[in-house]
Amino acid sequence: MTIGAPGAGRFILLLLPALAVQIPSTTRAAGDPAPSERAEITVVAAAPCAPRLREVIADQLADVTTEVVWTCRDRLDPEDQFRQTLPGGSALRVWIDLRMGAEARLTLERADRFVVRRIALTNGLDELGREQIGQIVRFAALAVRGEGETLTRTEARAAVADWPGPPRAPGETAVRSEAAVRTPRSAIDIGAIWSVAAFSREIPLVHELALGAAVGRAGSPVSGWLEAGYRLPARYDAQPIGVELSAAALRVGVAAGPRGTGFVSFGVSAGIGVERISFEPLAAAASVDPAPADTFWSASARLALFIAFRLTARLSVGARLAGDFVAADVHYDLRDAGGVPHRVLSPFRLAPGLGLGLSWRL
Image (tube, rainbow, N blue to C red):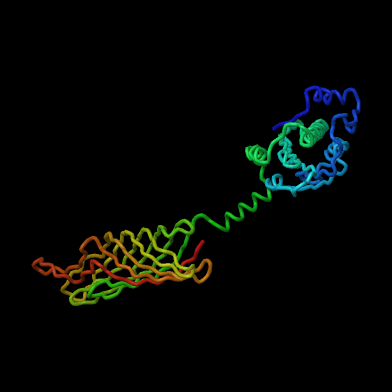
């Protein structure tokens, strides 16, 4: 419910500065109730807590209550206005929220009878605004003490809930921003990986160094990963010719798996990649005419099982067991004088490997 000054009262307020007439507000009408024992008024505003407004309200309530107790706050818990009072409590409780600037918000309660009001302040908390708030506080106090129309606790709570919230204070924004930094929505891990993998009968093992990154939502078991690696040069010295091989690789994929206790995590990953393979024939006999060094591209797919141990909040160490499947049948041949090819080296189409790595969470 909304209670305001009558039209005639507003007209008199507007005339007060021009007429220089002071109308005392302490005169009690014959039908007004006798003063109550106590009024508890909370003003929500920045320092110095609107002292001139408090003077106006105290003057307006001089014949309505025998004691006024003031409380000043810089913020308001909305539930404070609707907490149940002790049985038989008759104190008048008033909350005046001035944080909006362009309006004042009033909640007034006595014995479970409520008045709530939004009061527009055209020129802020000037003399006219203070007088307007003071008179509305007075009329609302008389309403909850007499036969005036008021709201129940439920009705008042619902009315206040529809009001737009006050602007955030700078300190509140800073706290929210700081919390957002501490709890990012995305988790990014970067790291270095060393791996060894089976390659061929002629070159049993090859080594690779790689840099990797994984990105996922914080707390989610699914993440995407990217890895760039370099396979170290490996030589096969044979008669009458050998070969030296190296490769650069780029792979992308996804990883998924249940989380452990926080110290350990494990799961499975899958991805695809391309390799730029460099080879150089190594002639061991003068009768052999080696081909020039060259490069070519090859595609592959990877499936891996991994486990990681989180040493600190950011640092982890992990291991993986991977299997790489090469899409093409790659082989290196020697052709005799008749043009008949003889295979010198044939990499495995499916190559298992073991990797170890360190990662750092950004």
